[in-house]
Image (cartoon, rainbow, N blue to C red; front, side, top):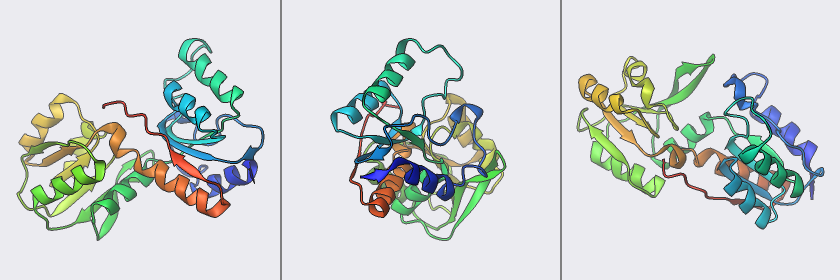
Length: 244
């Protein structure tokens, strides 16, 4: 058993919550307190009713998520939000968010990318990763599919052998023009609007879409494993894929 306050204070320092900007509705940090003790850590991508219900079944009392409860903005505590809060309160769950950069680092690592630097500024922070790597486009695509354990949508309009690979997990496909300005020839992200595929052809870039959910499972897993080791509390990943 570990103190909730100790874990939260550690996370706030480790993730630099006061320094790293994010969307206003993210409300990064502890979103719901539990009874004050942590005996089992859970990690999930979304604070959905499905994830919360599964966490309760598994006796998780500290749930670490990437997308918190308040992303949709201010809304009445009715319907789905009421049910989510009810589940959390009744089962003594705590929620905390992991910054998007952790996903990029873990995904790049799983692809075996080296010579990595940060790029792509958002909210005053460089959130993406750029890797200088000469590698077969098809080899990289296969590595990505293996890492994500699923199908990757590939728009092969760039060079057959990469030189500069950009990684921004989640829904960063709409930023393809800004990414291209950074000299990226192969862009890996989760999802993109239709017009981004057309843009990839115009820009002569490779665009790999691994899925929003799939590309954002890495950070919460890694952070939960780190907390488990540091505080000697067991953890498990609660997989609730959205299909996107």
